[in-house]
Each structure stands twice: as C-alpha cells, then as structure tokens.
Amino acid sequence: MSATGVAARLPARVRVLFASASVAGNALTQTWALWLLYFYAPPSGADIETRVPEIGGLDARVVLGATLTAARVLEAIDDPLIGYWTDRTRSRWGRRIPFVLFGTPWWCLLFVLLFLPPDAGASGVNLAYVFVVAMIFFAMSNVASAAMEALLPHLARTNEDRVSVATWQLVFGVSGAAVGLSLSSLLVDLVGFAWMAATIAAIALTARYTALAGTWRFARTDDVPSTPGFRLALTNTFRNRNFLAYLPSFVCFQVGSQLLTALIPFYVAVVLSDVTVFGFNGRDDEGTFSFMLTIMVIAGILVAVPFFAALARRRGKAAAYRTAMLSATLYLPLLFFAGFLPGVPSVVQAVAMIFLAGLPIAGVFLFPNIITADIADDDARRTGTRREAMFYGSQNLVEKLATSLAPLLFALVLLAGDSADDPLGVRLVGPVAALFVLLGYLSFSRYSLNPDATADGR
Image 1 (cartoon, rainbow, N blue to C red):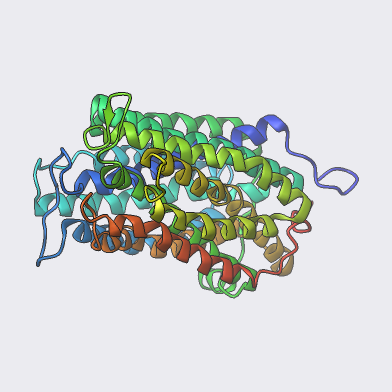
Image 2: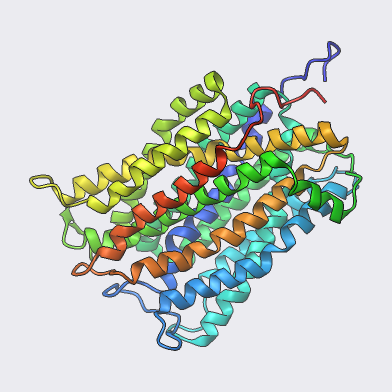
C-alpha cells in the first residue's frame, strides 16, 4: 500500500511475467484434453492401436473414462489440504514459491509418462498404469499450480491490476492452448505421441520457471501464514455464499470447455472424414485437420478478448462472465449442424461453427481466477485472516470431482454414434456442453459481490 492509503499498482513487467505462467497449465491440460482419450481409445477406423481393453462388455472409451474419473476423484481430496499447507507455510521464500519451484518438474515429467504406456496393445496393465500416473500427475499439478494461483490476490491488489493480469493470462493462456491444441496436433503427425508429450512438457517447464523468476521478489513477500485450523478454514470456505454461487458456474463452464476440446479429433474423424483440402484427407491426416480446427478455436478466443476485457471494465467482471456463459449456450449447439447446410462445403461449415464456439470460451480463461481473488479479499475483510490457497484449493477440489466426469460423459455421449456412417454421438457433444454451461449460468445468477469494489489496499 502507498503512503496515501491507496493500493499500489503492480509493475507492468511483473503483471506480464506472472500471467505468463498460464502457458504451462494450458499447454499440458489442453494437450491432455485433446489427445489422451484418443491416444488410449481411438475411434473406429483410426490408424493407431487401442491401448485399453473392453471390460464386461463396456466400450474401451467408457472403461478409460471411468478410470480417469476414479483417478481424479481419489486425488482431488488433497486439494484443500495442499491449499491449507501453502496458506500456513513459513519459509525464507514466502508461502508459495517452494511449491511452484519443486512441484513443477515432477508435474511435467508425469505428463510425459502418460504417453509412454508399458504395452503396445490393449491391456489391463496399461489401464492400471494410466490410473496411477494420472493420479500422481493430478497431485503434482495441484502442488505446482495452486500456489501460483494463490499469489494473485497478493500481487494484484487493485481492480485495474486484476483485469490487466487476467487479460494477460488469457493471452498467455491462449498461447498455451495453441501449444496444447495446435502445436501438439502437428507434432503427433511429425514425431509421434511420445516426443510430442516431451516437447509440450519442456515448453511448460520453461514457461512456469520464467514466470516464477519474474515475480520472485514480490512473491516472497507473501509470508504471513493464515491462522485458523484446517476444519474451520474449510468450513468457512464452503459457507461463503458468493463462493457457493460462483463455484458451480466455473465447474460447469469447464466441463463444457473440456467436452469441446475432446470433441475436435473425433469431429475430424467423423464429420470431416471424406473431406480433402490441399491434398490432406480428414481420415488419414487427423492431426493436420485437428490443427486447423484448434486454430479456429484459438482465433475465436483471441477475437473475443478485447470485447470481454472492455465489458469487464465497463460493467464489471461478473456481468462479463455471465455474458460469456450465455453466449456459449447459444453457440455450442451449432456444432450439431455442421455439414447440413446445402451448397456450403462441410469443412467451411465446421470451421465457422468451431470459430463461433471458441468466442465465449474466452470467459473460461479470463474471469475465474480474478473472481476467486475478489471472493478471497471479501472473506479476508470479514474474517481477519487471508487464506487464498484454501479458496483456490477448494475450487480445484470441486472442479476435479465434476470435470473428472467429463471423459466418462464424453464417452457415453459417443455411444450414440461415433462413425461417419453413424455420427449422432459426435454431433450431440456440442448441445450437451451447452447444457452444462447453462446450468453454470443459472448458478451464477446468485452471485452478489460487487466486482469493482473487492480488490483492497492491504
């Protein structure tokens, strides 16, 4: 705080470097969402082997979805514990730095191991392997990322700084998404899945350490441990009315976004299987076609950034977030209709509808972290102690429990049809994603915190 009692602005260089951490998380999570299900349980007719077995007559994708759901649910219980741990930590580097510094390399290594299954074909060993590695990967993701997220309320203390950081996080998040969606798609065709994963992990590690180095001097001053015990801290977190209104909206929006991401390679293999562009065929060059569609998602997000940032400054973060969710409920169902318009090439329709679906996804990147920061500030004024990581950890707990169902839900929807001859399941993913976002929108209608009056001058 300045001598006048007004919160000091965070230097622009630090805002940008802190936001650059978003490259790492989005590179890994978007690659995961795009390729992991496809890698272990590809669609009928794909040119790679299925790596997990059918069990009890259940489709391999349903088995894999259930396995990933179980891994995420079992691991998710550690999120509030790790958040509480970072809130209470004392060290010469402050509360958060040690977790980011030592957790990030393990997080990246485990990501690579996910794409190195022990058996080449479908086997129970692979299923057990992906369960164990995924569970540890989720835990290390929490260790490395939750502490970084919890720095936001400490570093950005004014509304202007938070919107600025969020905007830069979206820019870097989109860059990370480009790495995870588009670059990974090209690398799959060029060097295969294992080297693709290693390359994406190296980029994520470099990005996270660059962000940490750039904010180190400011981050180490976050050194006052929270005071309440774990049970009281957790109870008070889940009694916060605005947090309870916001949390389902964030979770539902994330589910919709993940369904859209997982859909892309299947959309190529089914809707665009017979399309040829510049000598590339949707059936044989799924990586290249997936690259094209992910570029359109990213383009949609980037086009929407100035609109949502301006809306947040003019009408507040909550209003802009509601607009993003409402837009998603309108645009995502359009994916069902690609190829149905007479006289318009299927690929043009698919590209246009994917672009429209990408526009509101900007809201997933732009607003959740700064809304959580606002809630944490409001809670600190009421309780007299700061426990930012408990809010982020509790948010991650519920998000993981809910979004862990996304692969299983995706697999179940595909049971309605996942081939060029029977594409109903693939086409239904967009409307199902829109339904989840609509549920989030309805939950967020109960949010009452003034988004422009929460960042204080501690």
